[in-house]
Length: 62
Image 1 (cartoon, helix red, strand yellow):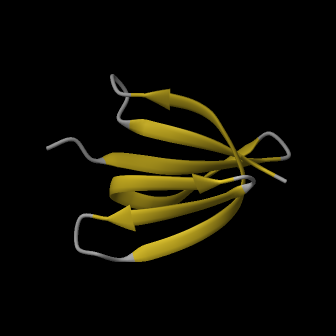
Image 2 (cartoon, rainbow, N blue to C red):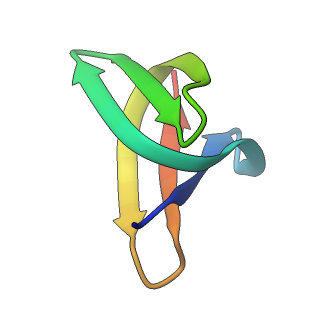
């Protein structure tokens, strides 16, 4: 299984907001993250990059 860490990019500052994310759902500018243990987090922004080699998703905050 492939889990990703989610990084929030705001004002050129990177902040780890969630680890071990297994599912990402996007609805316009709302992004819902679901972790390996079922934990959930919702962010506003858009996906800037998904890098499987680094194991991370970077979300640009609005």
